Length: 331
Image (tube, rainbow, N blue to C red; front, side):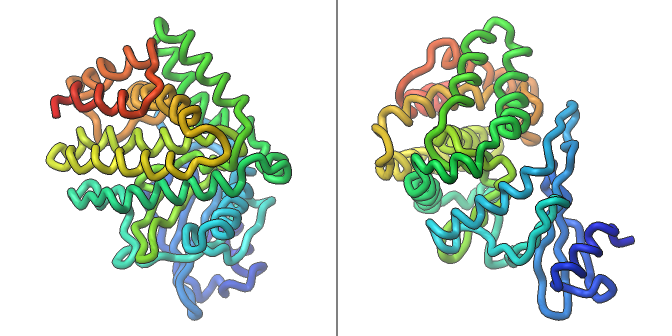
């Protein structure tokens, strides 16, 4: 049976008559209900934010993040056309919006491409280029700082479940992890996506398309850089046959991003990303949202052995983290 709130949204927006629409749930989201809608005038996607995320541990988040997600997509499209879905309708109070549907045959999910060993460092470079363009175009904006003053949301869905939760598990690293959490939250530099993960990036004909901007926040750009680089490292364990290409993608993304940093010294944002990266590595093993593809205790321990010393004594260069990772997983 069609959700009453969704039926009302379809009617109010004029997108479709609920009796004529066919809704198919889409998989992959822990923070929202997402449907593909097939209507007489074409297909589109509806997304509805959930107040409680679908993870093993208790993880609540305000549905107001839905509004910020839409606003991020509008800003991203302004800076880098074709980098985000087109917004078709929205109801900020209900936490619902409709956007473009992308045919998977033309817009495969980057995560699945990496899983299948189709690893293109050139595409990774495009990802870094696009993220940097959005950061550069929004840096220092007082208007966006007010519109995306989402400190509480970013804390509840990023800093607490990743960094602070990990600090509770690794008590001997609590001091540096808590400082990292505090330093990340007080940074106010650019518009941040907050979930730049391969599962949220489509490999489009014109370049990357970014989805799931529920964590959008005006804050620390190094978080976006580190968050995506983290996934490229972890996927060396998931797809070991592609490890060399994944490391090449790490290099391409980092270099492309850093070469376009013009709002501050590139070395400064790199140092902060290098400090965040090992914490995020450990968080995806022992935080509230562990990656689903690292399940063996031996693999988890390998990540811990690499990440923990880098948290205790963080390097200033991303290449140092990459080197420690390659050595630790024996590439």
